[in-house]
Image (cartoon, rainbow, N blue to C red; front, side):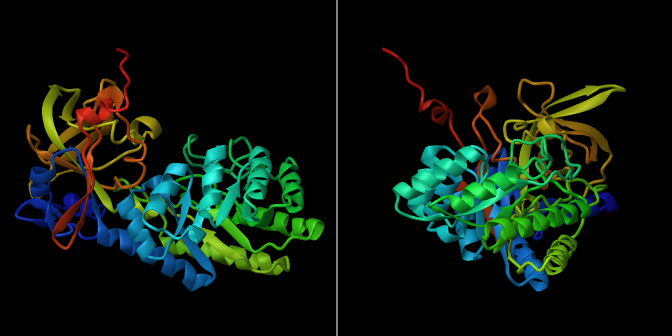
Length: 442
């Protein structure tokens, strides 16, 4: 096995191995998985998922014991994964009634749920109140007023955090930056609107303000934005405690922790994020004579991204001499829109030729009718032929949640592997599924 292949394997799930020239994950032969479940196929490794949960818990609680790790379910959620999160005693960050319902369907403790979103509908808020969601993260004045009204009608007092926009640029992609002033998310601190929100929240009859939340964006590859934003929000918290006599007991700096997608990407260890966030929180709180609040951390991508791979079958191959070789697969932007949307980059291996020398420079093209449907451009892999299986690592985050039925293509199956066994956790869609909600007038 050449060095480049060996290096690529570090991007795959922790249980990845090479046996008889085939790629194995969770002690399952990916080529046999394809024979049984078809392609495109998303394969999640259960041991990697659980290990990532443990890593976040251990690294943060070692530095700051009063920490809750709330998985950000927008990265990926389904019922099987929600069950694992429940077993791992994780918190859960949801942003829709759908994510909330998936968690509730497996008996996930609602007291450990944090409900985010910049435009929660009345029905979603009612559902959250009915299910007794632990914390609502209030994003705007409309929601503040509506939630107070609905909680009153339900005869309860809802615990809330206010989402703030601290005005800090984390230098992520322009589509994933959320902590700046010009953002649809949160109450801006610098304009005085955050203070107005505190005044309204503390005077609301049916709401109990426990603290503040912010999220800088994703992926954040620097530590200084967290330091600046944490100090900004804690200074604001101290001022608000003095002015409005509320107790600041909970604080969340969101998530946004970066992961490695390609070999030459440089990311920080989770321990570095944990040390910086907790040290800044402790030091600034002590300096300001603030009580040290419960810390709520919301990793999503950093837990699930590496835990899954995508498997595709090669079909047509178009070689333009001196220009580019397009290797066409049976998936693409319908199951992973990130390269088209964010210019995201990926590595790949030929799963049935892992031990062969990587001498072919190719671009992996999807099957969708868009020129931008390219999953990886000008990468080097083993020589590829029609029928080969392409394996792409780091596909656990955002690919499936952002998938679509563009061109009326059914979405792929998802399986979970562990210790040589595979189980289906989402069925492959069929053509009939795409039409089952259509109404034809007689």
